[in-house]
Figure 1 (tube, helix red, strand yellow):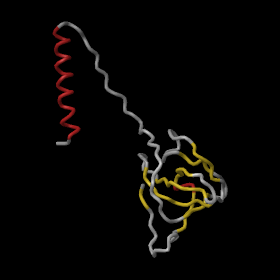
Figure 2 (cartoon, rainbow, N blue to C red; figure 1 turned 90 degrees about the vertical axis):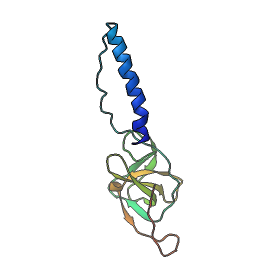
Figure 3 (cartoon, one colour; figure 1 turned 30 degrees about the horizontal axis):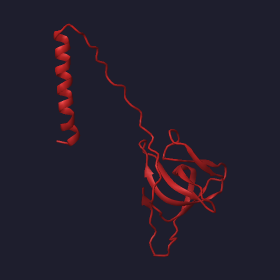
Figure 4 (spheres, rainbow, N blue to C red; figure 1 turned 90 degrees about the horizontal axis):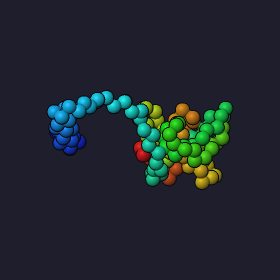
Length: 136
């Protein structure tokens, strides 16, 4: 049994007892089911520094984000069409989309962009004979 499940049992038991006491005194309580919550955007700055680079597609530029989500995370900068970006690490967001934490070449502009926004190169940037793409 998980610790989350075992922690919930005392709470459920207390709620059941409270409802029984209220009903015994003639107090009615309406219980409504909780609404299904939408996935919460998780915005963060990773520490990984991987290898590889990519290029934002020529026909558009993109806002870089503070997390791997189009909405729910703020803009950290802009990468124009054709900009070279350095790939630091990648992750899947709660929708199953692949996002990369990148830096725009020649700048101190960092942020997240969807894998759909660029095409990439596998480059052994540190010359160790291995190409490493890190998961954030």
